[in-house]
Length: 355
Image (cartoon, rainbow, N blue to C red; front, side, top):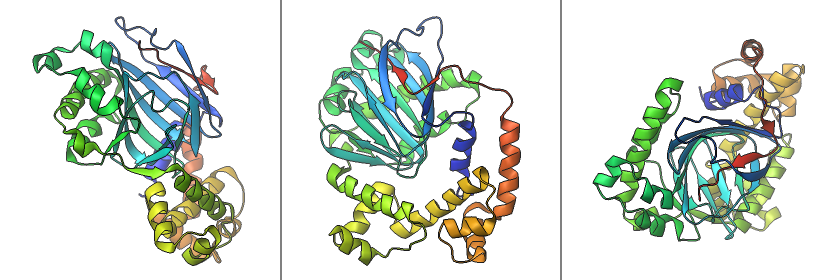
């Protein structure tokens, strides 16, 4: 079903209140938890969860889930820490302090130093995201090189020059090589996570080491263009009872129609009409879960003239009728709330200090 990733993330985060990020630290006898000593301030009106694993000395892997429009954060800047982000579902945007914005779709990979993203904003144009973040202290890697990487004489300084020195991030588009590395890391049972993480982090470093830096050119949108698309997005999503045409938006925001369509797709990953159809259905899913409004009332709220047209569009997206979806989600929510609580729910979380 088209909505399945959204529902999966929603289920994982169902007990976390809005405005909170949950950090779950998984430690072992060798690394301990002392990597998380520097406070990382963060604000969001949505919610998220990060599961952090120390894979090797100086290398952390985080399983990430977000239901939010954006997260703004501030942390220490370190040009020798390489941050690698993989987007599995949804869409990720980075608004960097350099004034550029980079957007990742499903399967894409970004690479940059933590200096590049200090005082920056991560956005989620589709309102949700599942991904993996890997943080590598390249100085620490040179001192504690895993045997496989030492055998091929991997040079961390080369990775530093390619991916950390530039002020703008590198983006690798989705492809078979990246998919083979990251796809097995999602949905693993707990007992298999660390072995796979160790294996695949080394495979990723080998893959990056044999790349030519020319093929990792960043895919960018100017921040002012991204800001304009966000204004248009706000207008479209705050007035679901209106059906704006491309021409109307073009005249209102003084941008030609071809640029509007191209930049909107660059930010949100799909044409305006496709995006708004999905947004209307996801908003309806939210209303079906959180309100007692009738299906006819919800259809009107999300911009459908008739209940019949709404039901047809909803079933195309979810393979369920609105009434069936409401019944199913009520059962899922009840079964998932088995008394689990999170003691470390907070409006900020701790970043790691890898110096």
